[in-house]
Structure formats: structure tokens, C-alpha cells
Length: 359
Image 1 (cartoon, helix red, strand yellow):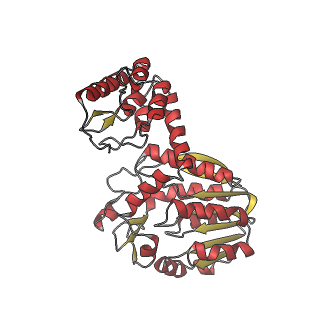
Image 2: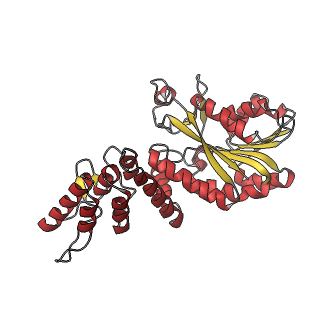
């Protein structure tokens, strides 16, 4: 949130005029007010139109103005990350702009370029904020987990959901994608993070030649053994953190499909895995991951997806995202989490984007 600062009456008038011009879609007036006048003063590109709801001039420009107006404000230093009281960024305001669709494209590209230059600084900051409310990977691996009657996994120390049944159609699609390049009886597939075993059941349905599963949580590993996954003829179960075992696995296997879905790990962990993938995958192999990046804000989510796309492009992957409809807003979806005392939702949209990354 933009911190209030003491301003002279003249500065307040300039900022008010700037916001009104942006709201009216007057590009020429916005450009004029951003330029220094005869007294050397100019309106602030971070002017706040509505202090109560933290609506900024860039949000007004994104919704009512032109790409030229938005670009001028960004060039002058307007914050693309700023959020209104209800959590909307300028990017979401741009989605409502029916006059100039280029405003959204411009904001998305600007945000992605900033993140690429600054090493995904905003995404990491948002993850740090989230990490204050959930267990770290180290804490999670040393905590007890519970399988609920609904089949969900709950971290008993925090009451947070680790994985839930509503993900089933997503896991089916992920499994289909990472096994799509090989016929049944062929292909070597790796899943990092067993969880509820949903994706592994779908992988088995595709009958790969070899199915390798890495799982680091002792309770989940015990559940796998109890269910007999270690007895399946084409399945190899590896207990440990992927960071500790994946290089050795790469000496034995070249994978045609890889899926990544761990708990309490973040952007830098995923990037570290990405950098190891070309060495352990076959050319033409398909990689996918649980796309839970910035799951509570659609614009940040799209920015994160595009940054991930370009990072993977640099490693030799072609990347696309396939949309899947989901329903997590129903009254019973998060009941098991709320019963454990947390209620923290890790997904907020009605659409999920499956990453399909081909090496």
C-alpha cells in the first residue's frame, strides 16, 4: 500500500487533476500533467484517487485510459504491483478496459520484464508473505500429517491442506500430458511428490514402462508402502528429498515425463529443479508442475506463469498452458481444512492452467 506523505496544496491539486484525467481517458492531459510545469512541479505517477480503497491513478488509467497513458505512468515510476483494498492490481483493472485491450498486454509485459530483471523479486516477496502462514518444507517433513475421511491431506501442526480431492481432474490432465509422447508399455516417468497418489494412479492407467516416485514425508511414504506401491512391478519408490536423490536417479534413468508437486517449497526450489531437468530428460519429453504460483491474485498468477515460461524457454523447453475449469468455491470444498482450524485456501480461481513443457 502506498504510504501517505505530506503534500502541498499545489501537489494535491496536480494529483487530483491527474486522477480525474486518467478516469476520463484523457491521454493528452495525463501526459501534460506528468511533465514538469513552469514551476518545475509535476503530478505523481503514484497518485492515489481513493485513499480509503487505495485506488491509484495507474488503476484508473488501466481501466479507462489508453496504452499510451499506461506506458507514460509506468515510465514515470507508477507501481504495477500496487493493490487496492480488495486486492486488485492495475492488471485486473486493465481486464475491464473494453476500449483498449493493449493496456492489459502492456502491464503484463512490463511486470514480466521487471520480474526477469529483478530475479522474480515480487513473486518471492509474495511467497515470503505466504510462508509466514504455512509450514516450511523442513517443518512439514518433520510434522505429522492426517488423511481425512474425504481423502484430503492435512498438516496437523498448521491445520493447512497439503493436497485435496478437488485436484483430481487437474492431476488427470497432468498425467495425460507427461505420458502423451509414448505408447503404453514405453516411456519412463518421474513424479516428485506422491501426496494422495492421485496423479500416480492416472500415470499407472497409461501403463508406462517405468514409473519412478520420489516422496520425502515419512508419513506419506508409510502410506505408499501400506497401499503397496513398492510392490508394483513397474514402480520404483524413492524415499528422500528430490534435491538429494535426483542426480543419482539421472544416472540410471532418462525420463520421458516429469511432474513436480511438493509442499512448502517455492520459486527458487522450482527453478533449481528446472535447471537439472535437461540432464535427466529425453529430448521430446514433457515436464509439468502443479501451477499454484500466486494462487490468490489472477494478475500475479499470470505474471508468474509467464516468467516461468521464459525461464524454461532459456533451458530449451517450449511451454504452453492448457486451461481446465475447476470448482473450489463450493461451500463444502474447504470443510476438512476448516475443521482442522486453518481454513486457508490455496486456490481462488475457477480456471487452472496446466503447464505443458516440451524439451
